[in-house]
Length: 280
Image (cartoon, rainbow, N blue to C red; front, top):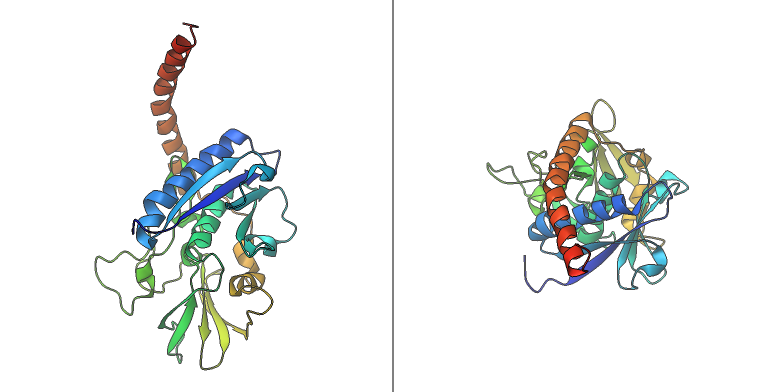
């Protein structure tokens, strides 16, 4: 990671009474670690993620990730741009909201405006080189391919090698290794690209028993970002999420170990604070 990479600051905010601030802060810490430890070095970026009690407290230069009970329609999920052109994300509160928040954080950091593309060979027979929309979590977005940070479920994401022309042994195509080769779409995920020959956008989707291709037709950048327009026609991606059994067990075990390790330290700190305040 370049030391000159600009620092982007994100805010995790809850607007649901079902989410205690303690849980919000715990997820924020996990996103902070994922961003700085995992995503940042691979994609050459720097970011922070802090929890705020309300949106009014968020500094104007932070990009907010807002958790709500009901975001209206499924297409409202994901990353948007505000009236100043800055990105923000909406996350539906459900059993897998931390996974969704992680997904949106990673994609917002890697492609803030939702229009970044990378060239590569199309996975569709009959097409040549196309322009892939950079959405780093989409191909492996299903909960079963996520991982745990501090006992919190977070999303897998692909690496820049995802667009390599050919598979090479030992190369990492996604953070967890779930993606085994360039441009692979795992069950529950999808991939979007622009074909310059037809000027149409296409997708490979794997929402059913088998993967399939979709011709989305022409998409213009005039009204809103390419990402937003892709989201509008990919409703399957916004079904309520919940951690897989495997991920739930992994996260629960990690959280238990973290709590066991943190409790003695917290007790020592409380003792030291009491001594400082003359309460010992």
